[in-house]
Figure (cartoon, rainbow, N blue to C red):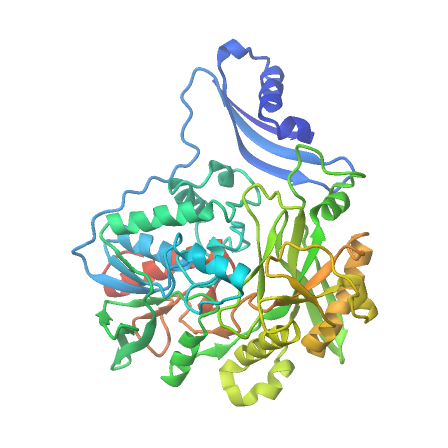
Length: 527
């Protein structure tokens, strides 16, 4: 006997396993002795009214063996003696491209400038404790990419870019919790992602693929408008039937290499700003309409904000980005002399802090002073902002900060709040760090958000700078259908670094798509 249920329940029923089981058994007039198999298939929180509710889809099996929740069962063939394709970058785009190539009978050879996920931890500790930035191994560079030690959010609006369920099930097959198949806004957690990433690596290696860590691509081998391979920092040349370029949005040397070799790149829209940090309890009270705390059942509350402002007659979008409930702010610089911040959350989201990027769209007029840099103009603007943040905060990884209320009022903060940002904060006037086209729209937006979410613009909110790596300021163009660079055959720009993704999920799906197109064009595989 099989039942499917759609229910709207109180948190203490929906989010407590024992209470939920008792409720379902009673609702279906079953007995515990029937030994029913009960599982949720979908779960979301509805906090629009004062009484928070949980929407739950569930299925119940009595006297039947339930099918697996994750239906994807992939067997990776041995490709050790198959034609090889090269992948530059071992983030989600590169790793999913590698796994898909294996499915299609092609040997992937990955090059990652950073270290493996375990060794990488020592370099992250050095940034946090010693303010030392390893330019090759940091929060952005290394196995798993920026996502491994940033957050692990797995939701995306890119429904048309690929098979979302398939990607989630591949994560589950590599030790991610099945809960990501159930939650409307799935999240693995930065504490669990390293295990998942390491298992994906093992799948690639066991199938005969190669992964080269501490190996930086320094040149491209191009003959007759076709890329045939890459040169690495050890001067070795590697060739393959195609190259997937999946370097992430912070591999600036790759953009410079392409520009130097007259390979077409283009500027694209992006956004920059700060991180805003609150006590998580403040956000819980606002979102869950509670007087004291969210209680034992509800997860740390999140939010999403967007508004339109005007600066010098030009409309400016300001929006929250990569909101991390129960999370931490981390130093994401990739070179000394710059300060960059990002957010992350552990799987339990149990930090006492909430943080989110709060960023302003960069308009074409903002790049006019950087015209001499051509398509690299946005990159130069990023650099200058990150260097200013470092300079004003003391030339270490200490970050410039200001209470949100003081920023809106235009005064320097005499004291700052406690923070999750481990390298520490320095009170500065952020108007000295941020250019006017970011600072003034941000000021107006915070006032608007304070009206929309009463208590959001409060004395316990502080701004921490700078959030400058929301997305790449450069796009590496490609053909719409084939994903191949329009001028350089065999090159497949991929993921966030190429301007075609905005997070783990969209990067993973783009990696699969580029792998499929490479296989179709150069290995005769069906798309």
